Length: 159
Image 1 (cartoon, rainbow, N blue to C red):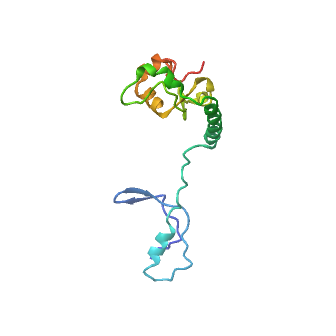
Image 2 (image 1 turned 135 degrees about the vertical axis):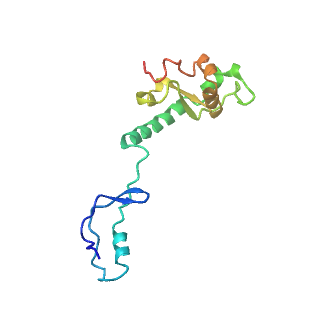
Image 3 (image 1 turned 120 degrees about the horizontal axis):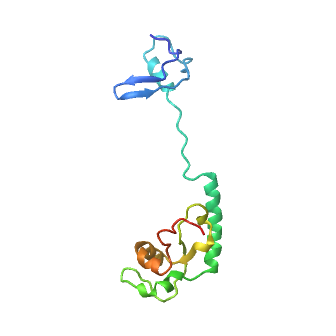
């Protein structure tokens, strides 16, 4: 039987391809000499440690989003009605119930996108209801004519 305390190669050639090996020594204190389960016990101790989970947002972005949520709440309190419904009143369709009636603004529409400093730039925010927000993104030509979406060359730019 081979000595299980020896270090092995970094990579092992298997039928399915190369497999990485760990560099730590197995725990052989609990093994009895000549037992059949010795190799299985060595393999159990050679398992790599579980990987750390990748965070969906960095600490900086989490801070920006926390600040954005506070400012969004304040903005929606200052602009309680849907601005897009008034501007899109002439574009009423059967699939989108947009009318001249006042709908409460529950979402923020970013006229030029949310990249970089545009996320927190209230100059390009519009308080909208969910139906109008969906209409803006599904009908960009009509939204551009109404001034609710940036022109093609202005997207992502802050003036």
